[in-house]
Length: 168
Image (cartoon, rainbow, N blue to C red; front, side, top):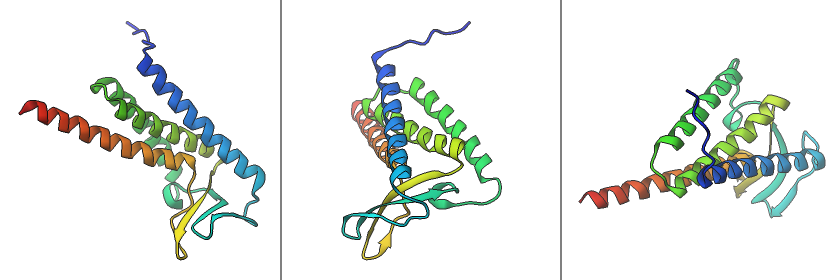
């Protein structure tokens, strides 16, 4: 028997956050592609040499890692992770922090996946560093995934702490 999809406020919020992250990510990448050439000929220094907007096209996976077959592995991994996250979302007790974290992670993953699928590369534009030492250039989707993981860890920690406090 096919189960009907229950459009609860929780599910609607989850989907809206995913859509918002994907739209904002694709919008910032589109602006970057429209206003910055590749390879980069100009950059915008927002905070001296510590925060720079520049354009990089990443044809590898995380941090530009690239080797034959990596894209097939990353596509398979993407779908496995999405399946797990949706399964986790449906099975775990309600936690608004975990819900928001998971939806932000999924939105970021979909944003980068769309680039990789339709363009063959992921557009990155944010470069941060101190004294000439820079973190790899990243984008809004990468930031969303990082923020989502932090929220998810925090939510899980608080949920486990609450559970252990109740068990005493």
